[in-house]
Each structure stands twice: as structure tokens, then as C-alpha cells.
Amino acid sequence: MEIIYISAGILCFSGFSFIVKKSQSDNCNIFALTASLYFAGFLLCIFKTIPVGSLFETPSILITLSIAAGIASVGSFLSHLASLHTGGKLALVYIISNMSTLIPIAYSMIFFNEKLSITKVAGIIMFIVFIFLLNNEMREKSV
Image (cartoon, rainbow, N blue to C red; front, side, top):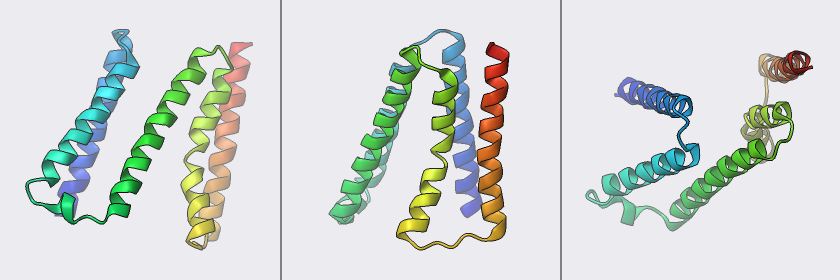
């Protein structure tokens, strides 16, 4: 059953990426598209959980954290869009948005005392080096 959920997740993510790329090529409003997709996901979640009654049995802290995560996600998206429209360095925005992958890793190390093996540390270092090398290459092409 787990493979079905993983496959469905991959298909949904691929579909979302396709829709975003298609809307960008057609010069559609990305904000409206993303907001409508977030809202559709919210409605799907509500309509899926209400009939089985699990929404009302869910601890209130979980609902609160879910709402906070949704607000943070939308806020992150809006700030990313705003940074692209301010005329600032696109390379800096690119670095910051790619570094956001490291935030959950740092969070788990600090709050959950997760230990990193040598291979995980090597992977993180290679990821950071990759981002900066890619930024340097982008900067050289723009000069």
C-alpha cells in the first residue's frame, strides 16, 4: 500500500511541476495559480477528513501546527515572489531558496538530537559547494 502512496505523490508532484511550467510559458499569473492549487489542496484535505470524522478527533495542537505550516509555506512563497520582483540579484535568491533544504536538517539536529554520519556530513558539504559553484557559474554568464 505504501508504494501506491509514494507513486501517487510522485505523480501529483510531477503534475504540479508541469502545470507551473506550462503557466510560466503562457505568461499566466503564478501567484493566482499557486494560491488556487494551495486552496484546492486545503479543500481536498477537509472534504477527505470530514466524512470519516477524523478531523474532529485530531488533537487541536496538530490542527494548529498544520495551519501554521500552511501559513509559513504561503509566506515563504510570497516572499520569494517579492524578492524576484524587486530587481535584486537573482543568484542570491536562488542560493537562499536552495539553502532552505538545510533548515529541516539543522532543525532535526538541534531539537531532535539527530546524529549525522560521515556520509551525511559529506553530502551536506557537497550540496553547499554545489550551490555556490552554480551561483558562481551563473554570475560569470551574466557578466
